[in-house]
Amino acid sequence: MDEESWTGIIDVGSKPVVAREAVATGLLVLSEGGIDVVANGRSPKGDVREASTIAAIQAVKETPRTLPHCHPIPI
Image 1 (tube, rainbow, N blue to C red):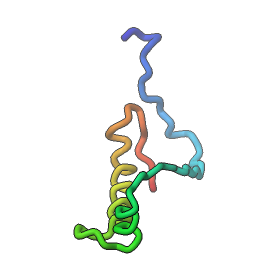
Image 2 (cartoon, one colour):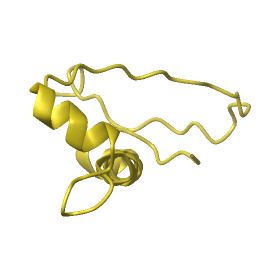
Image 3 (cartoon, rainbow, N blue to C red):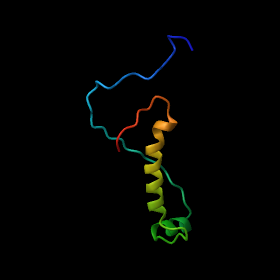
């Protein structure tokens, strides 16, 4: 990479703190039996919705390690 194409990290220490919010959406396709298992908590491995919430929080925490030039932010 040359000097012009380099997209290095910029010092943002002097920028003011700004409250931001993001909304994520998704689509889950399940059979009727799968819907029943999730909706009624019948999975033998535990609460599917709770597990997905924990997985999403862990993914958010790992984002700065995955995306280049992404600063860690409080969640």
